[in-house]
Image (tube, rainbow, N blue to C red; front, side):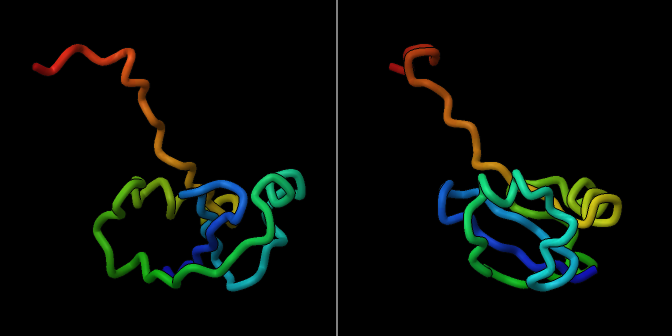
Amino acid sequence: MICFVYRSPKKDEMYLYLTKRDDFSAVPEALLKAFGEPEFALQLNLAKRDKLAREDIAEVKQQLTEQGFFLQMPPRIESLLNQPDVA
């Protein structure tokens, strides 16, 4: 399965995966508006991979198949105030 990955100019580390290059027809208009003008980042062959760096590859494939896109959100940043002292 080949997919095409686009980065968001509005939100650092937010990516949109598509099954067809430059075909945003499956992506809801409200999501595209919030995402900003997609910037092509890379092409991936998911069939040749066992895992992805930050996402469950099975979930990515499933969402690509079922809805035609996958949205990768930025990683959550935990507050340093909520962490125990490491001394």
